[in-house]
Length: 228
Ligand code: SAM
Image 1 (spheres, rainbow, N blue to C red):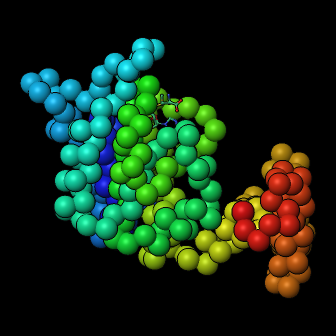
Image 2 (cartoon, rainbow, N blue to C red; image 1 turned 90 degrees about the vertical axis):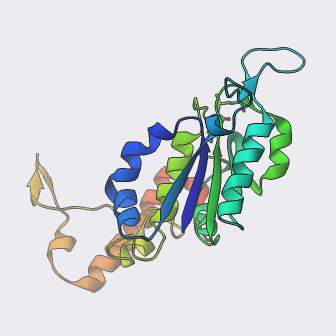
């Protein structure tokens, strides 16, 4: 799986791409991340990428030409990438959408915006507009990393035990059941006896019940849905 990101701040990706799950997946050759510095496609001597909005108003707007040139370069290098604009105005990401993104071969092209926003005409260059939640970030880089990590977890081999993906919150119709590890007692709170008994049928039943209760309490909007 290939991820291409068009960004004004490629340095912002250094640490997240070198650590943890993403770092391991890159080292193992399961994914690759190609950063396209938008500044390289900027206009004129000052490599300009933004300008004042027509009609007036606050802030600067990203011009379409540098973005189009960066998209062209990425698509020339890897034809067929699924083109995504990151914007708080997009469809809100959830696990079902992450699963669909993971199906896109050869991979994803993500545009991280900055400033007040992106020239409206850029929208015609995208297959999808995605938001990572109903709040506004200063730029799309963290949103791109959220998508890269969530999708990478679904790439075969990226997560040590693929069984763990099946039970996870939002992978099915419920949140995950409560988890416990050692010690058996912590600050007066004991691990439920059923988990210590070794009866796997009982444990399964207890976990299913807890998952249902927890979903009803915390995310009643998910109850009755096939998939979160
Ligand atoms: N003025 C824009 C609006 O109201 O839609 C918001 C611009 S925001 C300050 C700058 C950039 O951050 C956006 O172009 C987008 O790429 C990114 N961004 C901000 N919030 C985001 C979110 N919730 N999901 C994805 N990207 C986001």
